[in-house]
Image (cartoon, rainbow, N blue to C red; front, side, top):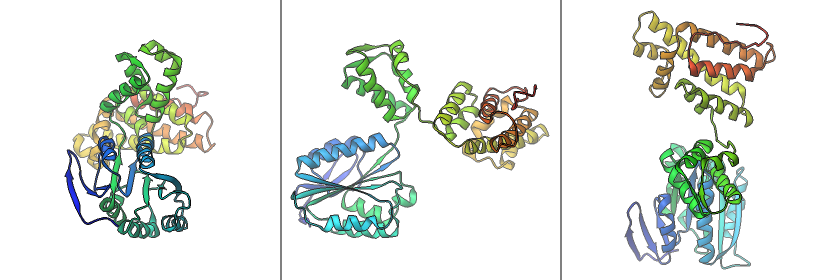
Amino acid sequence: MFSTDMIAVRCMDWVCYTFNTRTVAMKLYPDKLEAHLLSALAPVYLLHGDEPLQIMEFGDQIRLQAQKAGFTERQVIVIADDSDWSTFREAADSFSLFAEQRLIELRLPTGKPGKVGSEVLKRYCASAPDDVLLLISSAKLDRSGSNSAWFKAIDKAGVTIAVWPLSTAQLGPWLVNRFRAVGLVPDKQALGLIADRVEGNLLAARQEVERLALLYPPGELSSDQVLLAVGDSARYSIGDLVLAALQGHSVRALRILAGLREEAVSEVLILWSLNNEIRAGTRTAEATEAGVSEASALKSAGVWQNRAEPLKKALVRHSARNWLSMLSACTTIDRQIKGQAPGSHWDALEALVAQLAEGGNALINTNPKIPV
């Protein structure tokens, strides 16, 4: 397949080996992809992670370089079941009628190729054809996936790139670069406002940058201009909601709840997550009021160490009586969701989240017809 004459090239963050005109690297960091592609192409690329915009754009870079290198024919195969691996085998083994070199894109929405796919990928990587460049896009891989034989085969034959969501510290510079590319210079308040609104959703952030570029001429961009134009496009999760409520961030918690509702997230799952934390808080508060140490009470309540700190903040704000009130509200909301009790379960969830986040000893009114 390749000449055995290879030259080891050691870079800052990764190690690669040049085989004639194609490069094989065990692991590549995203910020090194551009430099890597300028040197040579690997026979196989695997992009995996849970940040769709970055995966798409890194894939675009690879596609563009592949096209420049003569891989002009492109075939996309989405793996939905084991039968799709036959399509991939046929594509890899067939000769091109239109181009000497081909790009095959393999998409793994679940990140799990299964037993059949694992064997197919291992065999392919053992003798990858010279006239095919394979680009695999995958969902985030768990530990078993990154330790699997098929992943190691790709890692040995080509390049693997883990794509992670940007941290809060990384989002600011990322936005600045995006705005600079369209000729806009946001002030500090405008930049913070956009970062707060999109909350790490890079696809939404890119759309907002493009929209602002259409609305305003090149130059400075103020927070007032952003307020007029930017929609609330945050990507929320139930975990974000629970964490914000426990930490006492009521405005953020209620905004996340509204976002979850708009995104049609199951209210059953939302209530289940809130109820778990409230039940743990109730048990812990009752135990501490009876004289048990907080550490022992948390342990007895089954609170894991990574959940302890946010719950401790909520315990400062709530008495055992208030925890019991919220626990009772969870029961009522469950009945409302099932149609067995009057009142809006979304309104009741909003009241519950506000009470959990804000503290105090007021009872929660889950039925507006019944005064508290």
